[in-house]
Structures are given as C-alpha cells and as structure tokens.
Image 1 (cartoon, rainbow, N blue to C red):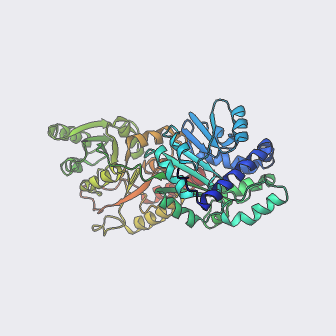
Image 2 (cartoon, rainbow, N blue to C red):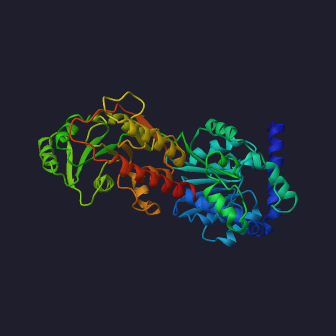
Image 3 (cartoon, rainbow, N blue to C red):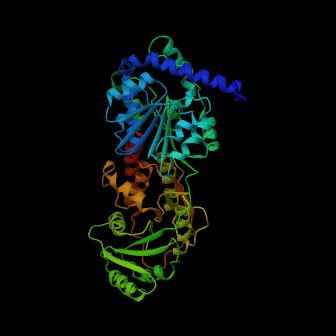
Length: 487
C-alpha cells in the first residue's frame, strides 16, 4: 500500500495552524477583556464594517473569534468559522441566534461543505495568519454569486513594529506571528486568485480616544489623501471574477424631458434595439413648449415598434423624474438618456453590454475621452467636470472622469438596493446623478465608464445654471465626504 506523500511545506503549514489554534484557545477566555481595554479601536473597526455591510445581509465570517464583529453587522443569517474550539464555544454562548462552527478555512473539504452563497464574506485579521492566501481565497469562489462581496481587513505593514511593541509591553492582546503584507503585494494576490477590487479604505490614524481627539482625527483627518497611507487599518472590498457570466436582459430607457419637444421623436427613431426587450419611459416635467403632448403623439405613432410609456412629473428636478421613471420601470437594466440627445442614443448598446457581461454594475458615460462637437461643452463646464471627477474618484474609491454626464446605467436590482438605503443620504440631490453615484458607492457596486461622443444641442437650451448649481455641487462634495469618508 502506497503512503500519501506529505511535503515539508505541508508539514510546516499544519504545524503553524496547530500553533495558531493552541494560541487562540489560550487567549479565548481573556479576549473580551482585551477588547474592552482597547474599546476605541475595536469600536471603530466594528462601526466601519457596519458601514460596509448593510444590515440584514447573509454573512460568512471566516476567523470569527468570539463573534462580536458578526453580531455587530446584524445579519439575517450569520455563520462564523474559527479554528479555535474555545473561541467558537464562547461565541455560541454570547450570540445563540447566530451559527458558529469550528473549522479550518485552509481545508478545501471544509469550505466545500459550507452551504452558500453569501452576500458578504468577511476575513477580519485573518489574511495574515494564512499559510497560502491565494489558494484559500480561490476556494471562496464556490460561495459567491456575482453580487457577493468579500470584505478583507488587515493591519498596515508600516504599523508592524509598533504593534509588536504594544504586545510586548502589555497594551495589546498577545498574537501569533502574522504576515504583514504591502498593499501592492495583496492586490497582486487578489488578482492571482481572480478577485477584482472594488474599493480600498484606510482607517484609524490614532487607535485611541485621547479625550475625543483620536475620534476626531480618525473621522476627518485620517481619510485625507496621503495621510490615509499612515493609517493602521486597511479594508478591501472585492468580488469574484469567476462569478461573472453574460446574461440576456431586458432594458428600460428612461428619458426625463422638460421643454424638449423637438428631440422627442428623434430619441425614439435613433434608439437601437438590443437585449431581450427595450421599454422607453418618458417622464415629462411640466414643459411650456408642448413636450408632454409630443410624448403622447410619439407613443401612439411608434406603438407598433416600441413599448413606450409616458408619465407627467409631479415634483421638480431631474432627480425627481429619475426616481419616478425608475419606480415605473419593468426592465432588468435601467438607463438614463437625457432628452437633449447630447449623448447619442446609438451609444446605449455599449452600456447594455457592460452591465449584461458583468464588467460593470454601475456604468457611467464619459464625455471627456473623444473630441467634442463644436460648443458641446463650454470651457467652465469642462474645468468643473475635471474637478468633480477628481473629487468623486477620491470619495467613492473608484475612477471617475465625468461625474456630470447624464447617462447612467445599472441593474434594477442594484437600483432597488440603492433606493432601500437612500435614507442614509437623504433627499439631497435635485439632479439625480449624485444620488445614484453615492448610492452605488455605498452599495459597493463595481463602477466603470463608457466613452461617448458628446454632441452639441440641436433644440432648446440648457436648464442648468452653471454658477448656482456649481455651488450646490461643491456643497454636495462636502456632504459626500461626511457620508462616505468621515464615518
């Protein structure tokens, strides 16, 4: 009978896991005391996890300890896994309404036995203990859908010496030896494991309260560019690339319109057919040029070719029109097409393909790649767009070149999540663009951009006051900082 060969690497890895298990069993009875002693750090960590993970999600916590983090995010179903039997025993007593199991997450058979999928999979301070990070992460694909998010938190490499000193002088709970990874190395491992990073946040510049000073600095100063590189904690939100699969979906094209009578028929005539079915919704905003009547005429004239619906807006502003139209929409994918047609209707199949393929979950048009037609964008608008693009790239942790482009596309299921979480931001956006952008960032959607050829208006005039609305946008940037960074 041939014996199974066990390599020296496997022997060392197994010995290390046993050392980690034994260490966790030893410290388990005192873990709550250490957490209480460092309550500023642990409290801030739990609060940011609650920001990233919506209440009521299905959550798998790998390396759950005594269950405090899993309980804090208030899952609809929570499963905690830990190598230590003592940790799991304490967690089960503290939170009997959650499920906890003893298990080795580096054991393929154990991971294969878990019943997924989950909305969120959390690895908090677990990555540094793994013997093979890439392989362990690769096994998680089977627990993911295209909507699953992996949330990984770990200590910054530059804090390694100070953390070790804190342990030696008794200010920090004893820890087994961990691997401190650079951000570049970790991003490389994620790529090898076929995970795509959606956002990366740095938190906690001062992991102490210091009579309120620490909390103030951590909230308003630590998230600032450059200073965030000095933070103790890094949080990475990723998604599985293997879970991406092309779908054939139906689409609703929403066209908010006010005083755009001359563009209504062209919006329909120029619209290509794509996907499973295309629905067109006009939401008319109490025009003075007969736009509403024109929408009704076009609906009847093209009834044999297009599924067209017309609604009159009860409120004011594009944002109100977008919410009205999306609430009435039946398509799997929701698109906004501005009635001025400066974004060509012919470009919409590209947006459809980006969402249907899974490459993007929130797709934004960008007018700043190709040359523009004539006076399509005035110089001040051009400068403002670049400023707001830089500001919002920082705020949402994903690249934006043109936040003010009106064409935005996402799945209806994603929009429902944004709408359900709208109370976090409130009714702050008369345009509708930033309500969607900030909502997409809060819901950890993958944001990408599709370049379009921006055309000059052929009918009517712009309904935006450049200076008044520019000041409003500046206030919204500050608002977004408070809601997305100073948390």
